[in-house]
Image (cartoon, rainbow, N blue to C red; front, top):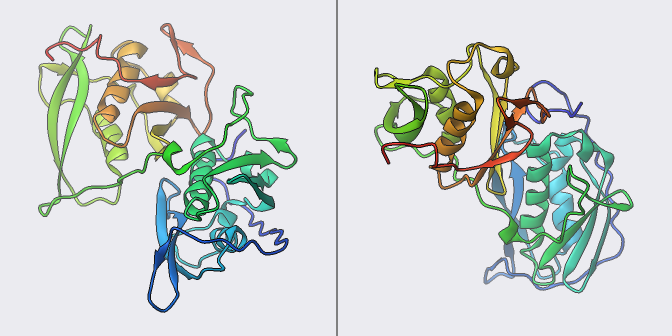
Length: 310
């Protein structure tokens, strides 16, 4: 079983770094008159759901080994955690033709899908600030890193990842969302605008799911979430929103078919600029279950064909 990024598993810290030689490179960091070059080192936030850039003062001699070392250390800052705090370390690094080859330790395999994506994004976005590095090729030990379907992951660039804007709160602490619930006949989805006024540290994506679980507030709409469903975690990486729900999502009494339930989630999240697609996890794992003709293991895209009143 994959270890979850948030909460239930305590990750051991591996800080194994191979610092072989010195690669002198120029950088696209921000130069200062005193020769200091400012880099962004991308750490994971406190709940391991998005990236947090931290300023690092380097110089013209700063190379990929130095930046990876900064990325891997235990920061001591609860709001910015290095990949070493997830049990991941880099055990081999090389660069050729502008592509850095980074070999990750076995701790990477213990992470769930969202955690793995965030680790790759942190490494890529940190290293590609160097002028000598335009992309990163990942290895797991001595073998090329593959996705869950066994396909080799290609060279990744900073453009491979979509930043998660996180929580946006107005001066009145008011958030505006477009949510999709079932219509009165429970055959289609309908959209409704909802303003949420609450003081919360939750991301916009998590608030969307919690509002769907809370259900509609008018009689023209029907609830879509199975009874008892809880949110374990929500994260966004590479434009994919990973929703980790409790097992009640599969076992709870559902007011509508799974097709409406899934696309109420997907369509509601896709209204956010940070989300292009959605992956649903159950207690930290991708489920191979097909329910009401819906394969829950797939990554879902927005579906407006089942929406009325648009």
